[in-house]
Image (cartoon, rainbow, N blue to C red; front, top):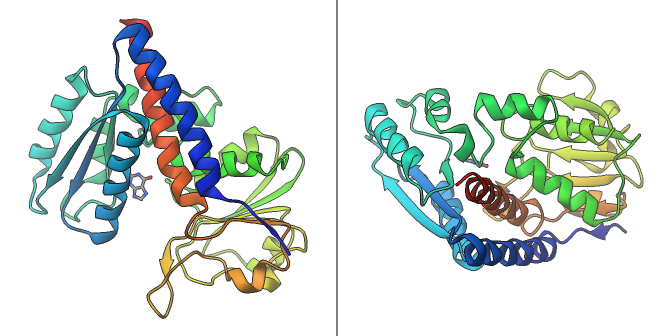
Length: 285
Ligand code: GUN
């Protein structure tokens, strides 16, 4: 029987600390951390994420602005909004919810955000900083995963770590953060030969594939720490992760549930990055 890593609980504790630091910053410098969230189009999953981000801002006492733009928004219109927000002193973090409608150039949009306000840490400048281990912001989901691993009292140093998935948002930065903590890291993807043979080596297994019940019990080493980044719907339309929870839970030592695992941590780390940006700004001003 695995111990459940409770993302909601860990998240609540971290948010309390963030709220406290935000209050201190406001009292001492008059700066209230501010986040702008932009969503283009009407993808229902993205709308839920954006709503949760707004709620989180309210919870920790941050200022927030939401821009719900129509699906037909042009690149020029989005660029103009980003330029305005880059100059806006009330705004310390800018987040453009991905994916964007197909006619928009995602890479160009990310590069338009001032790296100092890039609280997703998606801009090439921030990605490069992470690569060399000299960063201001960590990408929210991988940073949240690291917090969850730490909360369980698990040390990464010297462990075999396997990441399934190589996206820019999760897989690649996840590998880098595990490497920073001296894990021996393998990244698996759709062309990996004998995936189960590789994942069975993992002391720490992180799945970010986006397929329900993808990780089965035979893919998990007994006693492994299993972190599920997936956010999928099962055959009954119920929210579930990448991991076949019922089958894997008896094999693992620690496991994150979906929902209530990595998800709440991602938004908490976004609040943390927004706070960091505001603190840096207040120091410079
Ligand atoms: N879409 C899915 N995850 C994310 C995220 O972490 N940031 C942004 N901007 N969009 C996303």
